[in-house]
Figure 1 (cartoon, rainbow, N blue to C red):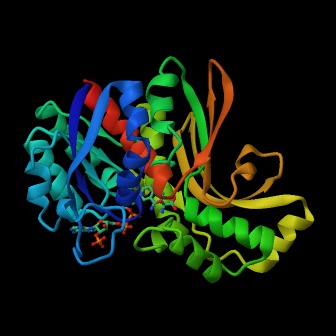
Figure 2 (figure 1 turned 90 degrees about the horizontal axis):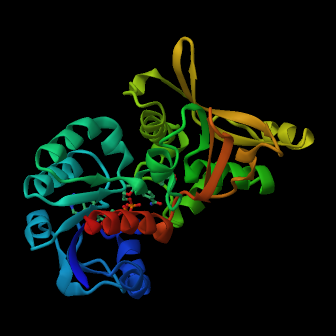
Length: 318
Ligand code: NAP
Ligand code: HSE
């Protein structure tokens, strides 16, 4: 049995999920992979907060303690930019592999972090940063490695899809639906990132770079949020057998790659229309196989933790 120690940065929706899922499925992971994962320490901001699933002795407010406490791999689930970048940078400097769920950080400063990791010969796993439990990064990086992607469309934000589903199916107000999404832990600390399309655009940048093998400038993505959709729009959609979805699109054409995140009216037969609540869906068109659709829970505690632990296992294997 290979014993691998994990330092955990953050113990909220996602970090707390990592603790719970490891407790729930640690035996499955051991049996399947021969890897015994254990958490050495957990960074939080407020050490007095009730955390029923967590061993108090592991909790610390000192990030250095987490990245230097004899761990082999650091999992980042604190979110935000400056501190997450500093803590990941320190982990890399100390020669640790990193798994992160932080798409804002990757969209803004991924290149610098990947360079630093390559110099120290460590790796950064980021499956959890896009589409929660759905292994879309692996699908693009390895499953479709022999195919040329021509276009990619997706519902990439669980919170906005949750709001659009409740507004469309139950005529719930935007504010009420957002409040439920927040209470379920789907929304970002600043939910305007979700509803204004920034989070989906960050994820689209990550996916499009993998799909098309080229660097994408975030400012080239046309972004429109879902705040302006009124109840009449949902009535209109229903009258025509349609649904409204917040659709991220990347298409390769003669003029280059066109990227957008905009609300769209879709027929019920569209694969993206089938993504309900916090589900995500990605439809990829390739030269060799045509259209393929992938579905899964795109936000939430255990779904996201499952992607982080999948990265940890892959990093631990080598
Ligand atoms: P969250 O519930 O707010 O949890 C954040 C955790 O990090 C908390 O435990 C918090 O401590 C801790 N923390 C934050 N800043 C810190 C700092 N400067 N020093 C020490 N501890 C700090 O957030 P989340 O929803 O888990 O999201 C975390 C990351 O995962 C974000 O990058 C998000 O975009 C990404 N993500 C989230 C989801 C989802 O469904 N929520 C899905 C995929 C990816 P306290 O507990 O003491 O406040
Ligand atoms: N806030 C994000 C969402 C979390 O709602 O999709 C998952 O990345």
